[in-house]
Amino acid sequence: MNKKIVALILIIVISFCFISIVVADNVTHDDSNATHDDKNTIDHDKKSDKDKKDDKDTHVKNKTKDKNKTDDKSKNYILAKGNGNDIRFSDGYRGFILDYSKHPASSGDKFKRASTSKASNSNALKLAIIECYKLDSTGQIGSVISNIVKTGSAGGKVGEAVAASHKQVSDHEVVKINKHTEAIFDFEVLKSVSGNESDYFAYTVSFRTIDDENINQTNNLTNTTNATNKTNNTNNTNITAIAQPDNGTNSTFLQGLYDYLASLANSLFDAWKPIIDSLINDFLMIVNALEELAKLFEDIMTEIQSLIDAIGKFLELLQSLWEGLDGLFKLLGIILTFIQQLINLIGQILDFVMGLISAIISLIQELLGLLFALIDFIMDLINQIISFIQAILAFLASVGSFLIKVIENAVIIITSFVIITIGAFIYNRIK
Image 1: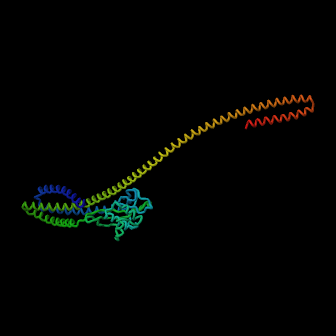
Image 2 (image 1 turned 30 degrees about the horizontal axis):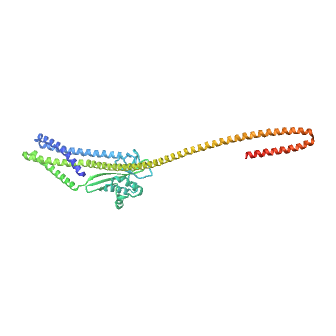
């Protein structure tokens, strides 16, 4: 909705409230004071002049006090009202970080005002902010300022407009945004008092409505009202001095009432216009903040969508991993089955080997028993042969030494033959 329409609607509503009160008050006073004389009128005029003088003195005093307050305020530091690269300050300005090598400000940090010439690319920063408002891109001011500070160029349509403009922007600049709106910009640099935080480039903006036709009509209406008031004052004086007919009195009263209401309407418009402009400015700032909030919400939703996509891919990866694990488990089952069968086979082989070993041991035991029996037999045979030989030797000893030698040789020959025969028998048995 146009700011002009909103302002007119508010003025009309408030004006009707005041008109109702004023009309009732005027009717009551006219009924009770219809017979007042010129003296009262003159005294009233003098009193009005005195009141105007007092008002003027009061205005001067208030102005002096306001000046003193301003001087006192200028001695105070400006405080940061947030944390980060794009924050608000206690003087109502919105600031952007100028030095990314330093820490950004935190809420409560102290700053002091300085000229914008303290910032490099200050004219480009001013032009960029103004162009953002002209192009209805106020939500991009933070990123545009950041690009200029980091790279010296804004980029995009704003960057093209800044590069094409050769205007030198002052710290206080009035810019026409469109056919019906002007923006009043104020720029400043806020320097960190401690020096630990970065300096900030700050600005504030207010808007006012442009309407030459309405301004001319208002001026003409004001002039007409002033002239009519002067005429009415003269007529009222004459009416008080000389009795006039009732119709003339009523006509003059209605004309004066109309002029008074017109003057009151103009006064109300002038009084409420700054407030309405301020309300509209605040409304626009709220709209801009809502746009930034919507953009932030859109970014958050984009991030959430990206997170959901990442989770989907992660689940697909988990599914693939599970399928791989399932195949691995099946392979492990096959391997375990093979190992079990291998163990069973090894067990059977071991059982066979143990049985074979037992059989071999039994065979060896039988062979050893047979060998030991053969040895015992041989030993008995040898003992018997030795006994036989001893008997023969004893016999031969009795026969003579000759026979003994013959017998000894024979015994030796027989013994050798027996041993050879036994050895051959054992060899053939073992083989």
